[in-house]
Image (cartoon, rainbow, N blue to C red; front, side, top):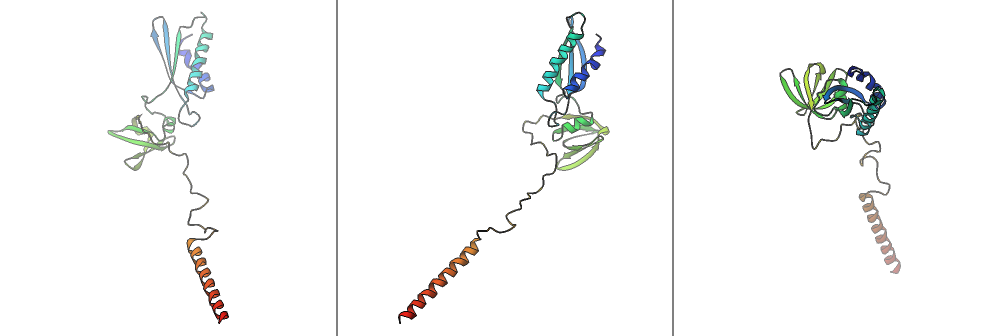
Length: 204
């Protein structure tokens, strides 16, 4: 089996696991060859592939290479990994999957750092210094995701609406307010005073 055949051989397996072939390289290691496969994918939350999916795909790729080697002893060792933070963002899906992350960019002669707010097939919107800036992806010379130890929560996929149940200003409590209770106390005192006066007149 030729090294050039590996791409076509691996792609269907990776697709079945929800993964995309990002990069493949073959390096000599003595009598064997180490095949380094870099994968990407949306994953269940659209933020990248899961480690379990990568591990399952790696096992199947190793089995597949063994089956296709006529000698019965495969000369290949397969290593599968995700694209990680060291690989630049170059495709629309890279920007989409890194929404909410901090990215350092080179745009022309300018260098800037911003958080990915939104993106589509051709543009990316960043929050830079408290303001939003939209760039054409084609004008970005290089973009790398930055490591954040206290990264904020992911941005919501949709705008959060207001509470449909209303606020405390809407409507009144059926049990009455403090002012209502105070009025009732005054009425009770007046009734008691009137009753006392009636008793005094009756006893005279």
